[in-house]
Image (cartoon, rainbow, N blue to C red; front, side, top):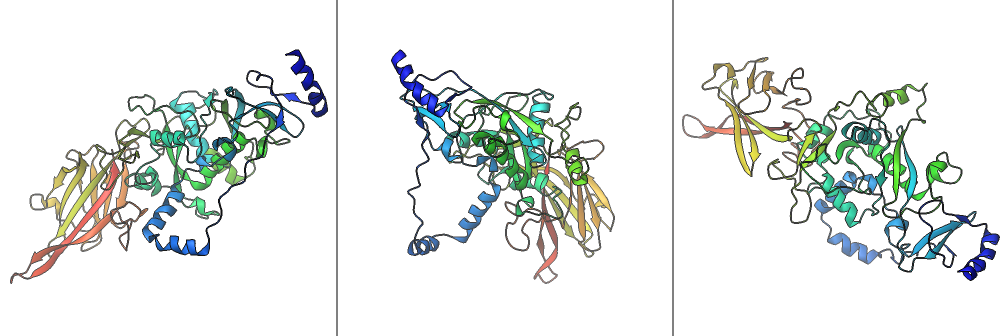
Length: 496
């Protein structure tokens, strides 16, 4: 051993080797510079291959791929150095001024260590901060006390990350829940988008989960209290900001590079993360300019991030998966029509009741189109179950003029109010729940509303995304000829 140490002295003197300041010391071995990643051996496809490929691609498949990209969780950014396994055979031992020195592992396991504190710039990624702060400060009741997170390693195509996205409720058979009715109605259609978007990613929502998929995550347990994950529908712009924060910290890039403003928050200098490395997360407000009104308006929305952490009340956007149902492709199951008893189920945090998709049908008939019959149903165990009805033949109040309204309850959790506006068939306004009495369990819409179209009642054409799809009610005249005698409105909305 003494001879080996003496042999290393010239190398240490000539390169000014600095020991790695984390983990247990690695056994002595030959020190070499960390190799560069191997060049990709993939070549671009040629023109004939492109034409052959294009001839087999259907438009609907292309649309699906675009949607998957739009739904993509930007926390899944690849890190080829860590995720490819190319460097698994090397163990960091020391650094020179510009080089990380490693030794071949030779079957010796790399050791995890504490890697410092990741800073999330809450101006760049405000909604990521809000989601993570809600989880750590409110659900986990940390109230600002830092909690240790463990890195599991992975990447976009990692089986571990894919499993975590499934277990958190992000990955489903219809993209992400934020884009699927009834959750798209609840979260996407009511979102207050920036009226003057700068980037395309400001116009669309993605499903953000915390803890992130690259972190060590527990297997889903529907009995867990509090929930093991929290979800939030956030803009792609904010989601990319959160991904950038994590990627820079993991790689030691950007503000964590030498001379960067957060260089001292990352331990281990240029060494890459290994599985089970641990770290803390901090929510950084240094970028907010106290004299910038826009900055301060953003800061006011971060109600879960700052002391005294008194406002741990759900703002109506924090939710979690309450039941996992996987299909044959090992994907969380969502379909149309949505059935909370046979598919993935979700709840607003602290609400305790699954979000369901209710269907209200209005039959509008009569010479003046003033006779209205109403029915509300929900799908349970694959069957449509009627939960409430009102019929104009037995209820004179359902002969409706402009401004008239009625309420319907039956077995609905909350009362549904229906109001008519306009002559003839007119427009109908629907109000589920009472804003004063029912807290977050309220939802309002009218028969002319159009929301996010994908996975809606009708996905294509002029009725795409409509909350209420009209169809003719057929009847017969005095001679037995078929005629249109009214309109049937078939509407859907989220409720719990």
